[in-house]
Length: 248
Image 1 (cartoon, rainbow, N blue to C red):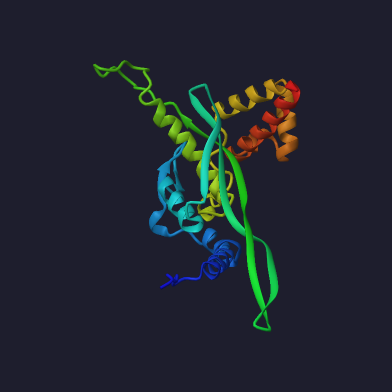
Image 2 (image 1 turned 90 degrees about the vertical axis):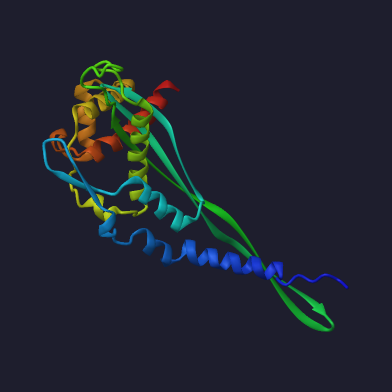
């Protein structure tokens, strides 16, 4: 007796691809990514100059991406540097969605009957988002007996904080919890460390401070006193590109 499969492989593949198309390329995915943030996952923390700001902890971003893309996403930090007590890094979030490349319909005769057979071919479409994040290098404020004042507490944890900050900014570009972060408006304002990082990259790109201020104002469209944290960090990739072209 010939063993017979209970599931037709071709039909199963077709069903899978159609489900993937519906999930990943339909309105369902957009609706899920841009859905209002549940109030019970929104937390608050103090900001410079006093006051509180709302945010969503990192694990909720991971759960959201897993729910939307399965495990077809990845995150990396291809570049990071330390400056004036801060770690700044460029994060890169890649999500992969399957899309139908083409349908092939074949016709052939079987017992004098015309038979149609449809096959599907699909590929993975990669969507990449990049953003800069930062984290303060935390140090002991006084001697503890085992550690001296000024000694770094946990540099790895500070790098993780920078990576998480960049990761969340990348995810908001896909609409994830964007309603929480866009409600901040101008954000917390630009710190001196962030200005220092901006001027360092501008110098490497061939500009002095005055030229950098003028260039930044042209890019953002307003004086540097009105720049937000997000806006100045978005200038860094442009400066890196200018630096690379200069080196070439």
